[in-house]
Length: 179
Image (cartoon, rainbow, N blue to C red; front, side, top):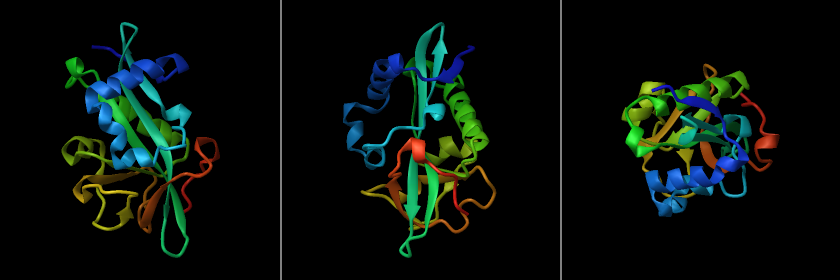
């Protein structure tokens, strides 16, 4: 099955929302990760879709976030998600390809750190590891065992600890990690 991976287009938004509702339910906006997406756009170059015979069958997005510690030091990162694939096509590698392409593009753009809330069994295959307990504080409850990260630049997570917040300047003002 050879899906085409490309940047999402404005005309894809309705199909993306329908796919996300199908994958995660209509109440998905209540989850803590969505608070980090309020009033901030995803990084356009990292908002990808998968198409099979012209039909949208998968989506992935990355959002700019800032991690701020108690001394005011901050680190820029990307929040991966949501990622979704048409349930009829799960297990054929479309999600993996979306993630590989998104992470490769993020690294090529100079981003050093990606975080997410998700299943280690799935994301661990892509190099994500569990965040040590208490290092990242989200703006609401999350299961700490599901908070994961992946360094795109070696050492990018070494000193990072603090509160995860939406990036104030939005995607256009996102800076590379200050390490």
